[in-house]
Length: 457
Length: 94
Image (cartoon, rainbow over all chains, first blue to last red; front, side, top):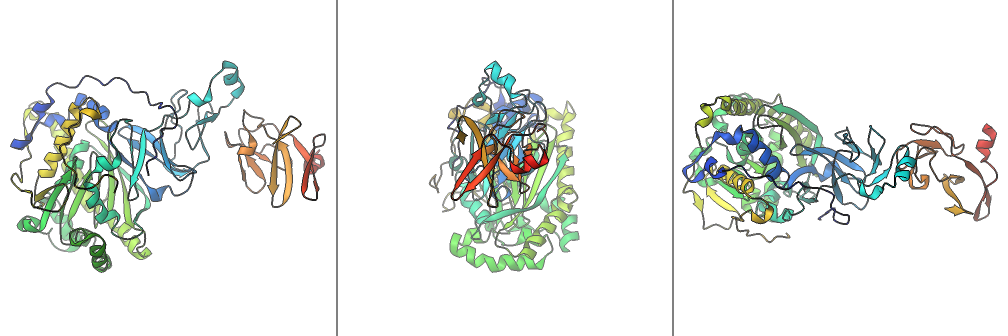
């Protein structure tokens, strides 16, 4: 279902692409596993990210379950652009910048709801759920001025599309399709968002918090860093489940890094490892009962991912944890701050008490007061803040684990690496970042990864 | 609908028919494109202000001036509108 807002003139005016920062190549030496700290601190790099990553990539904007009926909407962010994502009368989904094209005021102040129209507080410009300008206070004066209402709707997001209930949007009319953008990562997404017939839903509200860190520290952590868990989260794990984090570095033959187009997933095959940290035996039982059914539908490998020790980032800034069932977007707020939006996802057909246990579990672990979120936030804040030091900033960082772990003889899609204690996904994430930062349009972004999946699955 | 050059909005509230002017008194808008809310009010499709359908009275911001109502006469299958008379409810209020 592709809902390009294409039946009207594209009103998203784009300024000519700014001149690229010189010598971006010098920031990363991924073969050597080294990178510059400037990518986490430099304000010009941040500005270029806004243009070349956040105004260009497909970004997660909503879950279908949040907006089931016509007029249902959520207000969210694409980079620092506030957008409204709105269910239309024909069942499609459209997106608009949440700003009045008259004098720029924010049009909708609620986070989500159902609307018959969006009316600007400033001069009473009123927009339909399709974004069209329907009328204004003192409409006679506009009519006398000869103003054509059809030219002054809310600025549309270029494209909106969804995969397995996850709704994505892009601000770039030239972006590839969502299927092409996600590529082979869709194979793995099915393990979580299509493990049960009926798919998933978000339950409860959105929990928001602010962390004083660069957005990439959060994204790179979820894209492939299980290494930190055994150390960072040791005390939290002991408190929650009465034991240390599993020593996954001792069993690399049972675990993987996979990545595609900068998206990445680290996982093992233990079925319930992440879920076990919530301390609810009924959740483990639920997953163990479900696993053979998933194996029938999706095969053995994916069935063993449904709650395993694992994490995933969809490039650039959306991540989730199977088993712990937290889904999150790290919205950038300058080079040194993120606004973190999180939700709890569950299988729609799961019993209510199972859903409630997962919601309680995400609150205990991955909310602002959750034991693991607090651990992570402190690390990322100091990883960011230490770069304020001028000399500190000149020192490289290491990102070299897992060279020579590539697995070529496998049926698994994407780029596959042996062992989830690895930094292959992080390197792929930064390679994609560099490719986008250097390219002046989608046409010049190199397609490094060869898909095994067909586009329109 | 258009009756003799007069744009009308016709309502069916639980089987009882009402007619008012179609244009909103606040700004340019067609009330017949709006939604019936609170059982007997019409919400303007543009600014969501409301009018009481039986009497035409403005009920909520930004509506300030009543809309004109018309007497409806049901004649078997036909719904007739008397363009010279207010609705019964509006006339009673006067």
